[in-house]
Amino acid sequence: MIKVLIVDDSAFMRMTIRKMLETDPDIKVIGVARNGVEAVKKTISLKPDVITMDITMPDMDGIEAVENIMAKNPTPIIMISATTNAGARATVSALEKGAVDYISKEELNTDILLKKIRLAADINNRMGKASDKYSNIDDTQPPANDKVGQNFSVVGIGISTGGPKALNQVLPLLNTNLSAGILIAQHMPPLFTRSLAERLDSVSKVKVKEAQDGEKILPGNVYICPGGMHMAVERPGVITLYPKSKFDYLYVPSVDLLMSSIGNIYGKEGLCIIMTGMGSDGLEGIKSAKKRGCYVLAQSEASSTIYGMPKAIIENNLQDEIVDLKNMAERINCLCSP
Image 1 (cartoon, rainbow, N blue to C red):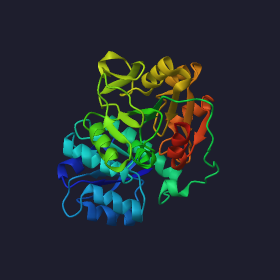
Image 2 (tube, helix red, strand yellow):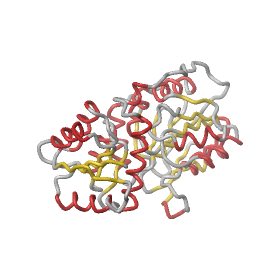
Image 3 (cartoon, rainbow, N blue to C red):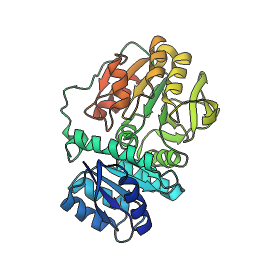
Image 4 (spheres, rainbow, N blue to C red):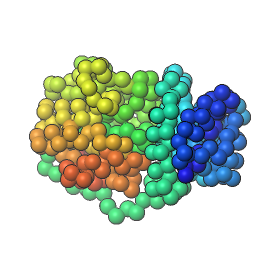
């Protein structure tokens, strides 16, 4: 039985979410809270497996509640947010502070909610409610400090669930003198990727921005694919963006498309990285890139919020290295040093 705490100041939203959850006999709503203060108290007393969290609430908002809960009684939290500029910025902030996923109110339906609740419950089971997943890693993999005989001109990163927090632990540690530009496909809708890029740029030494069609890929710069678009490299040093309707990929942006295009254009000069995320997006793209000589890093299971995407790479023995999250920036710096 998955125990859920619903946090929202709207009685209508609390009732709506409850009705959706009660369609699944394996999910039980064990409590509701009308603001962040109640949420923190009820998390401690009720010990839910998963929390759904509104953002704008009186007394204590959802962002502050996430921060308090993750400090006092870490529990997987799914943010329920509006698809607005303010909502996107707040959601990105909550994800960086430890929330594991989000659903926009415009996309909220029973199927999506139940799927994300089960996924969050699985995170809870694997984490054993560790106070901070990354601080409790059994670090059996010391960071490699050697180069590999390849000179990298571009880095592709594919990432999904758990991405904002993971990227917030990697990008601020990157050196500005990297030999490669970095292209990121993060599964997110429009507005959210812009807020993510702005937030990461504010805390990083490297330049982080939302990518534009036809933009030149500059060394030491990071380009995040806009939500609702696909990103590829169709000619050396230039970003190409496509509307999601152009292809029939399940995930947007497609990691498969990005990685296969890097392989096609850069070959041995391409460094491909698959990080935390559900599903297997990136598997086919990495297969293609690997055949063309790209070097592949996969995030370790212990440091992944969701191991699905890295697992697909590792189970198919496509990775050259398995890297813990806390060592990822150091490894990129080493491999892409001039």
